[in-house]
Image 1 (cartoon, rainbow, N blue to C red):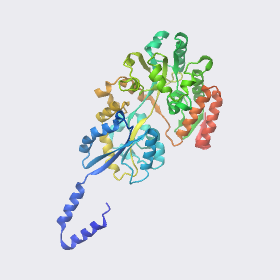
Image 2 (tube, rainbow, N blue to C red):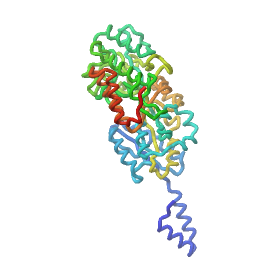
Image 3 (cartoon, one colour):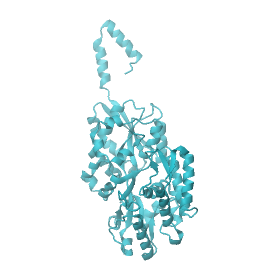
Image 4 (cartoon, rainbow, N blue to C red):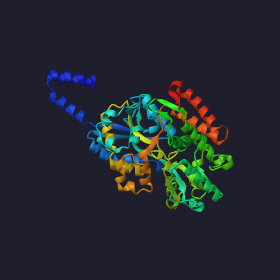
Length: 456
């Protein structure tokens, strides 16, 4: 500990005139002062968007009791998602503004670690048996970058296939439905098209206007159901051309084939508001059969959601997304979500980690995930009654075991845009799947560098 010059003078004086009691008293007072651990997180700025603040406020007394000598300071950053990223980036650059704990989108762990903003947690996590035992392997991997773990996930999401049972019944399809291959999905969509006029058979997010929904809910839900991922962690290269990539684009082409259209028309699909239209209007009116989408969708239909729909639990079904041919592991999901990380500028990383541990107990995480509407990242959250009783939570949680995640490297956002571009070229018949893949490969070579790409 650095001792101020004024205090050094007092110590020297104490040695000459004999005032040790005064010094002892000063030291005792100094030692008793609590250490402030600042926690930064995003809020949306409306009454229903302060879930993190509600959670931290509720568990703060418990944490301060569990970690003696610590006082928590909650730094609420009211901002949109993009603005939050910018504000956190600026704050993490300086020790005078950096929080001790910061809420990090798992998608940005790689770029923030590369920038030197985050503290590696490996040595801390090695002393925490619960982490290795309870966090799903995928949830540990999602915050790992170049062999180092930089965050602890406190909630996630998953993706699967929503389907309207009323539409299925009209089409003569089973209302308890689980496809086992991509062909099964297309067969159901074609049956709906043939037997239920006026209904959009299926939705697959595609194209630039739907941004990351196209990349993640759309393309990568397909790609990771093939043998070819987007990034090979063994070679450290982006896979820009592969049979799986081509098959995924062919699936997009099939859904949006204008001669036998299974998906939404372009005025919906390429509007940028497709999710709102599909979830708030078409599903509740029995005008959509199938939708590849996420675990968060029921929030739209809740009594406090954008389009309350009390009947949704009876009408809507959810199926696992199969791999292309039903090959192992049989099903696939994609996950994102948020984590908490320790700033590299924190003056108290050891205490910050103790706070992180205390916040991420079974009961505390279940409380948070119910409050926010997340899917739990701890296996034992399913044993907490309040979590298990949330509609669909047991099903959604079962998908985490085989869920994959985005390759969170700094260049990923640019590569994601190229995925969206390739999808849009195919869905609008502006390019064949092979030509769109070739264009994607050329673009990524320029983004990542020719030494960081490969073909299969």
